[in-house]
Length: 215
Ligand code: AMP
Image (cartoon, rainbow, N blue to C red; front, side):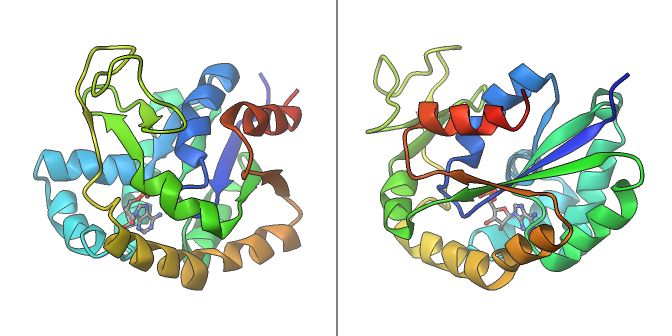
């Protein structure tokens, strides 16, 4: 069996991580783990994690590291992660990255894809973003519209906008990215596992660049 691999998708909100992750997950046969999706699921089910996370998410702030890491390591301990996983939206702080390296790097290889994007594209990309309430598949009103407005092409579910995809909350999320997450680029460069992708282009061209790192 091949070495398990943890693929980390690193980039600001709106850089296309959540669009590429399902495709990459299918091709590499690795589960897609989005901590944002896990939190939204916990909020929907009104779990204790969901109650804590909601307070931070509503304001565009990061959820505390211990909450994130416990949830993540619990998810990674599941059977479907035995060959690795694709991490989307985690780590988001140097402390999270260090804990992940400490816990996993002796057992798995780490590959980090940095989604580098023109910051001017982010607001338009995020504020037009919609997703399926049932299956989670992502769409964009302008760049990736569904065949029938408001309806998922795959499961006929209803398409909705995320509560934190508004301009006001987005400003906070981008600030959190710059202050706390951008330093990870340096961190992963230093340990020699960083690959950069130009994420300012179409999703097809981004996928092409991403796949080159695997085949
Ligand atoms: P996302 O769906 O990745 O944009 O995440 C939505 C929100 O969930 C973020 O703005 C944070 O409030 C929270 N969140 C998701 N992942 C993390 C993480 N790794 N660390 C801290 N907060 C997170």
